[in-house]
Image (cartoon, rainbow, N blue to C red; front, side, top):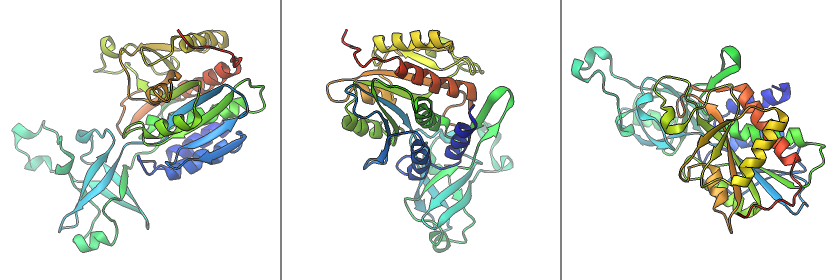
Length: 353
């Protein structure tokens, strides 16, 4: 991977971006986009728009959501223990025993999610995992409620303390690749396109609040009013135990970005991306989606009078966990595929059936 791009990617992954509090990460994205875009703006919800060739009549919007799942301080007990609520699709059974960072106005506060010693759990209950988030507690070392309130406030947000690690064969693991890898990809497309002759306007948008209802993509797409939309998210890889290929289709880390086929996605745009991939010798994988899916592609497709939408997914293992795992080669190939697709557009394409 390009050294400049990799440095940006690592900086973004090191920055907390829980849904609704993405601004720290969005500053990282905006600063990277400013190197390559004609203009960079942040909208009222916090989505960052990097634009190239803005005067072209045909507009293509790229969307990758910068927000990650997180936690919020919901209650503080008399003993100074914190009860949390979920921001997005938190996998509650994974939380026990994790370290967390609470992002307060005064700075980060570290804590742990408590767990009962196995010695104190009845043998018949040892295989049971907590399924209700309000049954868990975060211990920040406070003496009591008053002491805890000096450090944190109700509504402060938190993320799991699990950062980037390099693994073998170009694989990396971290919390929050869903979907900061998408924000990385759409921002890095601008690097690929800088100085190239474009026939279309490119709006690369690092969106917000996807994990709580596709909100940033909905409002950003309304503002951009694109003719073509490509979302970048993570997709289910099936190359580890427990994944059923009969349900989601086959996808392996390192075998290239996933292209999706289904009612949400423009068949013509899919064919354009497939032809581009073949010409550029980029490996891709296919996963069918038989219904509307919860990605920014759906939000773009449904905006205004309708948009020709597509979805490119970076294969990911262990989604919505602290150890989401991807291949850097797949992320890099996703950026290249989108850039090559855009370079091949004439601006005269039609997407009516």
